[in-house]
Image 1 (cartoon, rainbow over the protein chains, first blue to last red):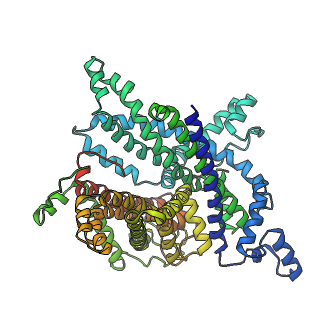
Image 2 (image 1 turned 45 degrees about the vertical axis):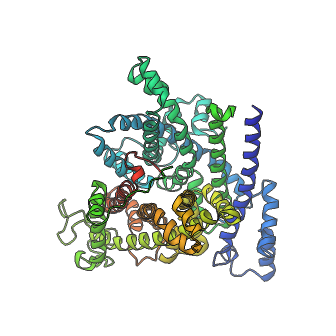
Image 3 (image 1 turned 90 degrees about the vertical axis):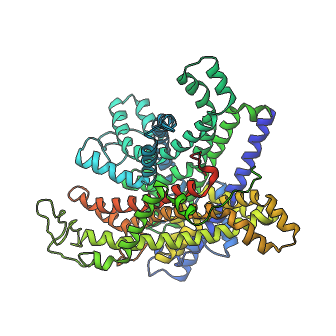
Length: 337
Length: 296
């Protein structure tokens, strides 16, 4: 257990360093901007004194290094500056939008697993049979459809042609769900408002499905090849010799071992899933951080772009940390070695 | 580790080996795209930017109210959808090709240097890669577009700056394996220069992987370009882009959903072509992967 603990501690430390370096990258990229962000903020009648005052307030005076130190000092105290466009603190904007995105991502991850575990097993079962070629082609087709195209296709089919599911926003405006945790599903449940819960969930289905449909073919592939790899292991042979049924061997022994590489992949590819929320939230008018990022970019809102980009990175780092930890917990070889 | 060198068959053998269904289908699709892009002025029935304001939002010609002059209908400004899809192919392929070349060069050079020499350089670049991996690619490329400004050249640059790590990681780890092979050691003992060893002994061994990744990267670049032009961060308005068509069509989703269908199919077709090609080439060019449906 002490080994696992020191592993966690080391991972946590390197995560902090990575986050710090990332903030430098974000800072430098956004300082390459060709125009002066102040020009968009101030009226043409502003005097030089006004400009200087705003410049100091926004931490835009001095060299890039000085600017960064000012920004970092404020960021470590939980102040990411104020959005130029929304005229609100960046942290306040993030606090209201981040739960929405997390909710969306978690639901889509659940859907992706529901699709890809049976899918991976199916493809494994088809190995060497007639349908293999067709299934393989089909999988490449699915891999070629990015999530935002799935979003558009799903809206056309289930929102316009057969209008059975909503595709705008997070919940119907007629429901007033007070924000307690920020997670709409949890809040509705806490209020005991079942109709709001159902409505919020129906709003989640299409965007979550769009993300899941683009994510699951990737999982299916790895699950299939991990299953194929475990198929040659000795313990599988032993289980078969003990007379266990083929399904029992598959579900009890092989799937458990194939889960580890699959878990690693989900961690590595999580940035992909998370980045997908950007366009999905835009297309579905879903009030999460992806949509916030697009708004910020359209308005050249530097403090907001900076804050949201960092939160995106932090989320990916956090998920990677969780996946790594889970890996240590689940894998007996890492635990004891 | 296999110590027996793989016999490489030449001539007919190569052609027969390339005849994998995915390579053939993907190759034909990619050639079709190239032909459409090349002969766009002859294939397109109309000027893609001509606005027929008396014939806006026409349905396709087979639907009620469609005109034969506009086979796939018109958009809000009365522009021919079919012609725009055909011309959009040009931008998609241009970005795909240029970005794939750029990522390949940057990623391969850094990957070979890091994998061959290891040491401090390897640690430095691999550290940068760890940072890059924490960035969701879409977020990163959008941020770069804000920093660099819009335009076709900057779209290509953004894709290169975001995606070079894909080549770097694969090439580096392969070079680390290859440099320990006996024939590379033999070349060292014979006193060949590092440059010669890298170019003649190491690179040929990594080449199949590079080809596979190149094709994959073309598909990725097409998606990134479509995303960037969808949010209006890509090209000036007179350049026809599939992503811009999607953004225009989305505003009319209730009464002119067919406008969206053409660019959606265009993007999926193009990405599928390069994904199939990449997938097939991976199996064909790498003998080790022939039995496994392996994933890099």
